[in-house]
Amino acid sequence: MSVADILRECGIVPTVPTMPQKVGTSQTLVASHVPSVPIVPTEKHKAGAQPLKSARALRGDFDRIRAALLALADGVGLDRAIVHRLTRADLADCVGFPAEALRSYLLALDDTATRQAGNVPSSDSAAMLCQHCGPVYVHPAIAACLPVVSGWPRALGCPWCFVRKAGGYIPRPPARATV
Image (cartoon, rainbow, N blue to C red; front, top):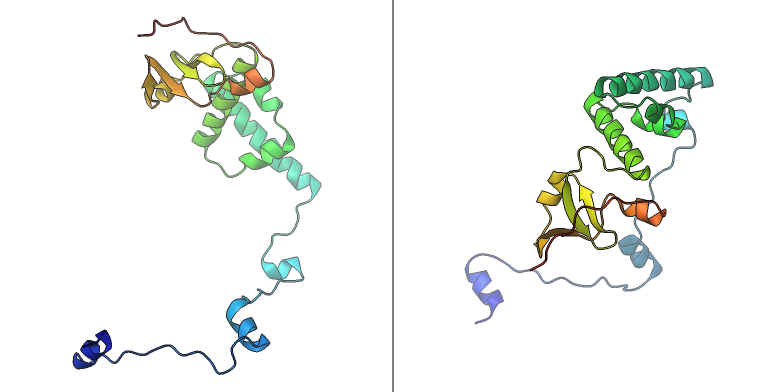
């Protein structure tokens, strides 16, 4: 007894797919293989895009976000120069983010500037071994999630890699005895 016979006994009638009469013609190939192309609107306002703001309105947006970032930097105790170094594109990217995200962004910028100056950020108190940079200081949360080999948390890259690539100075943690 075949599978088809068993299915028929249970009341299920199997259907066998059949090929259309004209296989491989241009009409059957187009219908089965070419996806439909969505209609592209020709006018921006029909697509729901916002009209472009004037230069004066954009300047106001940049001034507001810069003022908010300066207030956050003052609240955290960061150098205001970090905010003043941001480009218009950087400021535009900050629009719409909550204050806590912007605060974290400013702290990351400060840590980056500290590393570029060849100093260890105050939050980086743990040592790890980077495959490219060697022993470096990182935040304890980074070191805690890395695999430990021969007493060192190890990673394929680190927050100091860009400093090394630029030829900058990297402060080193004390060497550990290997077992």
